[in-house]
Each structure stands twice: as structure tokens, then as C-alpha cells.
Amino acid sequence: MISLSELKKQFSLWFFGGMSNIQQHLEHTTEQTSWWRVMCLTGVDYFSSLSYATGIAYLAAGLLSPLATIILVLLTLFGALPVYNKVAEHSPHGQGSISMLEHLLPGWQGKLLVLCLLGFAATDFIITITLSAADAATHLAANPWMPFWLQNKMGITLFMLFVLGAIFLKGFREAIGISVVLVFVYLVLNAIVISCSLGELVFHWPSVKEWVAALFVQHGSIWQMVAISCLLFPKLALGLSGFETGVTTMPLIRGDVEDDPEHPKVRIANTKRLLFTAAIIMSIGLIGSSFASTILIPAGDFQSGGQANGRALAYLAHKYLGHYFGTAYDFSAILILWFAGASAMTGLLNLVPRYLPRYGMAPDWARAQKPLVIFFTAVAFVVTYLFNADVDAQGSAYATGVLVLMTSAALASTLIAWKESVLQRLGFFAITLVFIYTTIANTIERPDGIKIASFFILVILAVSLISRIVRSTELRVQMVVLDEVAQTFISEACQADTGIRLVAHRPGSVDYARKALEACETHNIVEDEIIFLEVVVSDASDFGDDVLDVAGVRFGQYKILKCQCPAVPNALAALLLFIRDQTKQIPHLYLGWTEGNPVIYITRYLFLGEGETAPVTREILREAEPDPLLRPKVHVG
Image (cartoon, rainbow, N blue to C red; front, side, top):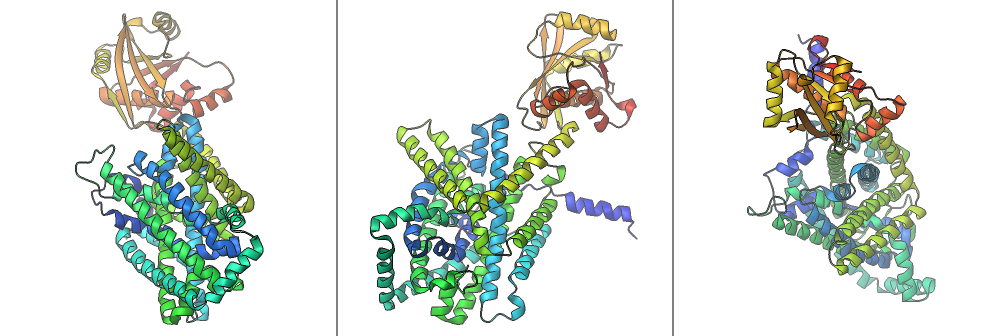
């Protein structure tokens, strides 16, 4: 019989094992495939928005919905598409626009920007999961053949979220093959519905004339309609989703065996084909569905509780092609909307382990997939409950997340294009201004989105700060490498009777004689025994480097070990433990006390990598080596 402790151990291995390595898998996988198949993987999110985008567009723009949709399509083809082509060129391994900004703005500025963008990305992906599930439930509940017990939208939505989380706990494979089938069937059914609906306009030509007449009565002239449509199109921003996912899946796209690994031109070209094809398909679908639904569906049916609310194309399918075809369309929409949640969950599992643990701003379990799946599923449950599983209510939060991410991509592209031709500089700058306007307009009109995103940002910042403090005494460094000179210094010290004695020295100063005299007088050691140790702080905003490279140099008669690390105490502790393990001797480290407010110095250590060096180094050693007899010695004077 298995003991309770053994069960706990097995559960811990299952629950916390299998660190989330989605991105590492993407970057190193050899199972690459055609660009159009990867387009289907991203398309379950992008194309599925056809199910609800038309209805939300009508609620936002009314009779002007088709014209506002055309403006949106123009922005897609001449704004978003060039931006993400640029992103593909500069992040061919799937890093995306967030990573581009991180590299363009190094240090804490870049980290804080990334944390804020992660808040908006979390808003985008979480709302994608909940909104898609809610719309899938709407299609199911509104089908005339469904029994009454399947018409509870809240219950159906929560059940779909539960199943999605359970699948990711089990493991999620063969995503591309499933997505190809779902997208193919869904697009064929949409093409049939939109074509037949546009064909119906021929038989309802008086309705078309009435729509045109109503437009002129309401707005006077075509120029006024265009102007108003330009102001209204930010409300239709749901149709812009999918580009970020398209570039993050780049490593799955087959390139050429002769591609340069650092800049795979063929893979980049295939990614651009993916983005262009997806944008064209979505543009045609949006324009066609917008014209057909605006003219053929009564305005009241778009409102909350109406038969076309959240399912305009399904409404047209049932009305003009019969309930058998309409039911087939419903199930196709339900499956692809549910799978869009899977795509968003994959995005979350890619983003969080990529950034937060590396910044020291997430607990260790944030690297494991299963705890993250449970956490994100729980958040999706709460969001669904707060929004009452309403598609329209979640549209503003979704649009905010999408627009901020696209604005960040446009900004990154502009910063890169600033070093290139004047034409590119002006073009990308203009696109960035348009996206900034769109984001601000959407935020003013629908502030719920920025409220939700702000909540995610505040939670991420709070958790990040707490995690940074809690993990401040981790060893961080996984490997220490000594060059030949450094190894010689350690070997010579091992042969001496006095042991290995390291004296910490601030980089930049060359007054080794004064420091040696001070150490000898304070700690009663001999000058010839001393090896100076200097640590240069690299990027303190990074949590740590896995490898610590140590170089040995001579300055006159003095021996000096030099290394670089984001935090001084962690480098000192890692080197001491390495020397102990390599030489089987207990090394001694000599430090000086810092003078001043300890709170200030602790804060400096957390954010600048240096401060209360002596006590922090000792605490790191204590946590790494619980046996005092085996622990390297730290002397302070």
C-alpha cells in the first residue's frame, strides 16, 4: 500500500513537473510544417471572431457598420499587416513585439513596460477564452433543436472552460491537425452562408435601397458617412485579433534547410504569406458578413436577448439555408470558438514562463504548466461570472487588449524603422498614430477594458514585487566557469596551508595595496594569501544568469578574480560554493559593513543588484547549504 508521503511526492512530481517549455519547444522543434497549416492554428482565434464581430459591429455603428468595417479592413491591410511583417523580420523565433520593445528599452524601463504589456496581453487572452466560450454557448443555446437544459449560457460556458482546463492538465497535442480541420470546415460554411446571404440581397433589392436611403437621411453625404465611420471603427477592433499569435508561432513554419538560423529568410517570407492570406480571408469575410447582416437582419435581433445577438451569421444560416445547415454551422462555430480558447491558453502559457520567472517576478511554480492552467482557468471562471457570460459586455475588454498589443507592435516597428529610410519612418509613425488614436478612442468610449487591464497590471506588479523580495536569497547561478588563470589562482591557494581566502573589492578601484592592508589588519590574515574578487553588476533588472564566467587577472603582485552578474551577493555565494565543491576545502570571504540606512541598501540590492552584500551573501549561503560545517565562511569587519 502506498503511503501518504509517497502519494504527496507523486502528486508533486505530476503537478509541478514538466516545466512549461512551450516556447523552448517551438524554438527547437524539428516538426515544422507548411505556413498554411500554421495559419489554421492561429486562425482558430482570428477567423472565429467572424461569429460575433458582425453583431458587435452593428451594435457599435448601426447602419454604418459596413462602411466602418471597410475602414477597419483598410487599417488591417495597410496598417496592421505592414507592422507585423516588420515584427516577423525582427523576431523570427517567435519572440513577438513585447520582446522587441524589451530589447529596444533595456533595464528596468523595458521590464516595467513588459509587465504593463503583459497585463494587456493577459486581458486579451483571458477575454478571448471567456468571450469565445460565451459565444459558443450562445450558439448552442440559441439553436432551436437544443433541449432546455442546454440553454443555460452561464452553465454551458463554465463547463466549456472546465473542459478546456482539464485538457491542458492532461496535455495538449496535435493542435495543428485539429485546427486545420476546424478552420477548413468553418471557412467553407462561412463562405456558403455569406455567399447565399449576399445572393439574397438581389431578391431583397428594395431593402438595399431602403438602407442606402436611410444612410443619407441620417448622415447627409457620403463624406460625412466616411468621417463618422473613421470615428466609429475603433469600436470594431475585434476584427484585428490574430496577428500577434501569427508571429509567435513562427518557429513552427517550415523554412529552408539553407536558412541562416539567426535570420531565416524563407521562414520570414512564409510568415508574411501567412499574415497576408489570413488578413485577406478575414477582410472578405468581415465585409461580406457586415453588408448581409446589416441589411437582412432586423435591428432588434442584434440587441441583447435577440436571436442574432452574438451569432449574426448563424442567424442567417438558419433563416436562409434551413435548420439542418444552421445546426451544422452552429456546431462548427462552437468547436472553433472553443478551440480559440485553447489558442489563447497556449499564448498565456507561452508568455508567463518567458518573462516573469526570468525577472524573478514569479514563484517557481510559474514555470510549471499545470499550476498555471489551474490559475488561468480559475481567473476565466471569475471573469465569466462577473460578465454574466455576455459576449457584448466582454467586447470592450477584448478590444482594449488587442489594440494595446498592436500599438506596442507599431511602436516597436517605428523605432526600428527610424534607423532606415525616411519613407518607412514616416509610414510606420503614421500607423502608430492611428493605433494610438484607436486605442484612446476605444478606451474613452468603453472604459471597462482599461479597468480590467489595469487590474491585471496591478496584480502582476504586486505579485512581481512580492516574488522579487521572496526570491531575493535564491542562489540563481547554476554553473560557474573559471578561465585558466582563475583556475591557477585557486589551485595555488589550495596548496597553501592557509587555505582559500577571497577579499571582496569594488570594481573600478586599483588601490589594491590599501585594501590588502586593511584586510590584513582587520581580519589578521597574510597579504600573500589574498585573492581579490570583483563583481560587476550587469543588468540588475534581470533576475540572474545561469552561468557565471570568472576570469583571472594580475595587477602587479595581486591576484584578482573578475566576473559579471545581475546581483553581487548571488555571484559571491555561487563562486564560494563552486570553489568548495571543486577543491573540497572551505573558502573564506572577507567583506566590509555598509554604513547607512539598511532599508535603503536592501532596496538597492533588490533593484540595483548591490547593497547589503555581507548579510545577504551569508543568507544565500545558509539557504543553499543548511550544514554549517560545510558552509563557506563569511567574515565582516
